[in-house]
Length: 592
Image (cartoon, rainbow, N blue to C red; front, side, top):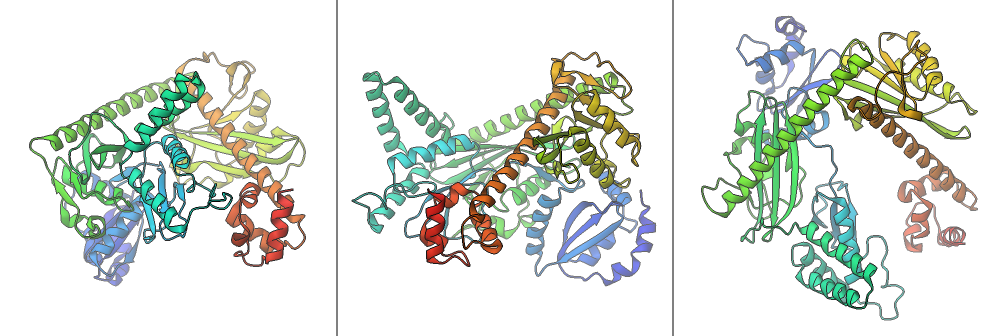
């Protein structure tokens, strides 16, 4: 830990050169990790205040002791600083900030209304908030129900499909542009809540199918109806209002806040979302709500007109870009009685339940990790476990995977993939050795959070023996290592020929199995992607006229042979280097 007086002396000249303008500052620890992001109207005054004699709470005092460096981003206005702060907190997840923990990428439905023939598209990634031409619906909480609903739309509105127009090109009576846009308007109305017509038609078809003893068809239609109902969240939680309303309930415990958000669009509760925020200790309810609103609505497209809350946010701390709607400003309401209060209480009760569930799960995981420490005779509780696996077919396209569990839960942002470079034959031992050597060389003593408490190898005694030697010859011989054999789920430790006495159905064995299975899944996924890419390259390289540049452009745009096969001549010739003749040749060769 760094003494604040020492760091002030270190930065005395830099502090003088910091401008007195608005902006964002971020503090870094000794390993150059961003540990705090803040906004300021006057950067120099704000940063200097951390190194004075002013008394702060324990959280800030602890932060001050860990500051090793700082950096700044100047903005034109304080509001720009607020926007940038929200973005950087989401990007870096600094340990001393209130941060929204939600690594899900929720699905959206988008319709490009400026296209001549707009398509319904499913996406998890909307690249730019300036895409004003998109009609955006979402995010939605369940991808499965969204896909099923799109399938239903494709049935009732067959011209507007997810990938290609089924009929508009092939049918004799293709629709006109005006007719097509009228259909799109119906779809938009459906997605905005007017779904009764479609539900009624499906119910009629289901009853007809059942009457004709076409039970499988009736079952499929029933599933479609259920998906639409799930999609629109038809429940007892209905609002009589025609406005777009969000209900935000939250509950606090220690350093965690559990949020439950209900989205009401056109009388129905369409979506429910759960979130966790960390770093809330010693913060007021208003501060926590401000942070949630800034981070959640920062890149949200379908914003509510009204947000129903239990405490009043500090509007000055919320970005004007977050608050701004088309022709109005987002309004916050604290209900005293009535329907809004009832739905808000439901959101609060759900947030309490979610928090209790998290706490129970944390207690269970804590017990499991303590038991694992005892059973494996580890030096410390294995809060960070890394598991390694290899995937190849007869030595070709050999790849390795590393998955990371922290406190018993997967941390996907820290997963890593490895292309095996030095082993050209079938030799799992050598492949595992190469991967572990490369991983251990990346570890840094100044980043203790990245050093595993336990390394788990997918394999038996042979795999463990070879990798244990790598560990002993590294700069981190003190790291514990074990292996998990698929047969009987045996757990082995170094220098022992017998497996440990761990029941395969025990919580600690199940945790190790989850790690092993996740590493296996991740390795196979990477291996399949490589094989698919090689197959794509081979298919295209055999077509006369396709060189490295055109091949690269095709890969960037289409990614798979299937997508290229489904493409159109007019789309292909838009790619740099592809002439009309070459486009015809590509489609002809791939569709043989």
